[in-house]
Amino acid sequence: MTKLTPKQENFCNYYLETGNASEAYRRAYSCENMKDETVNERSCRLLKEYKISTRVRQLQEKLQEKSDITKIEAVKELTNIVRARVTDVLFARGTTIKIKNLEELPDHIVSCISVMKKVKGGIEIKLYDKISAIDRLSKLLGWDEPSKIDIHGSVNTSFLEQMSNEELEEFIRGEIDRQGFNETPKE
Image (tube, rainbow, N blue to C red; front, side, top):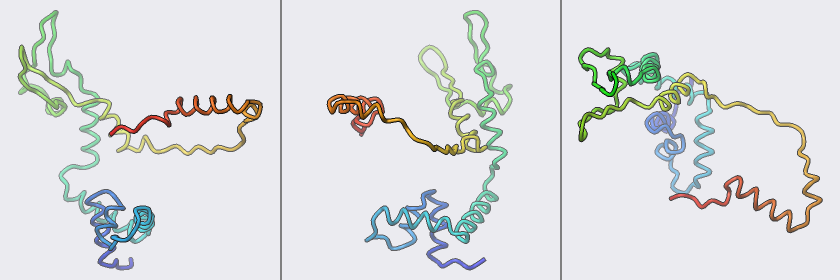
């Protein structure tokens, strides 16, 4: 493989650090006089270059080797969160609810507890959010890859030609409201 320039090597390291190609490009190259669009375009182009993407992969693999958690372990932990039940931690009979002895709980259940604290009248226990765990698991396993939709054909707009200007304006306003395009941005 062709050796990288010092700036390219810095770009790869900064990309690993920030996870953002544009930010990595700004740190590695002189971009003071560049527009954001230019930085974005150049950083994406650079990241797609074979030698750069290969180096990023190499650095990620080295980092993974140093990490004490593997992808398999991450999947296992997320799976435990998805499968955990409140009854794994609590015992209920009638109106009586008791916390099970934590020392006796298996590690995979204890690791699913996100909060345990005393509150007025008892103890509060929260498990990690299942929906978030499913979402992260889906991303990790590639289940949520974008779907490609190939749209061909035409849209019948003849009904628009039959409208008066006032009706057309009202239709457009209604579509804008329905699509949410005229909502004020939240700060």
